[in-house]
Image 1: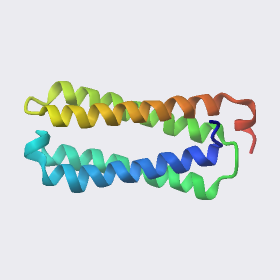
Image 2: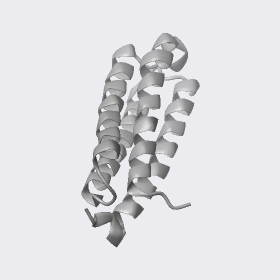
Image 3: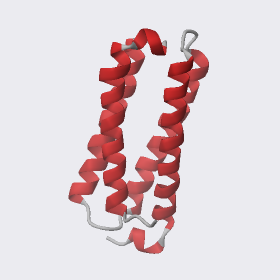
Length: 128
């Protein structure tokens, strides 16, 4: 299934909204089950919220193309995944539920990142 640049921004933005909501509302309330401190969850939620603003802003304001903007969010998403992986290794009290949540999140984000990089590499994705 081929997605347009705008569709990828929408998917990315809505996914970031979902992530920010889950981290700041669900995981924080059940932090003892996930084993991740609230400060870490809020920090990750804040990053996800910033990504949501960026992606949804691109969806609303840009027309097709603009590969550099798509590439930027793909790089940011990759960095988010690397930071999350580092946290998984660093947090001593993270539970299997926390590991499962963040592993699932990383897999989903990296699938989206793959689509974003592929779309950004297409010649027509660069057109304004």
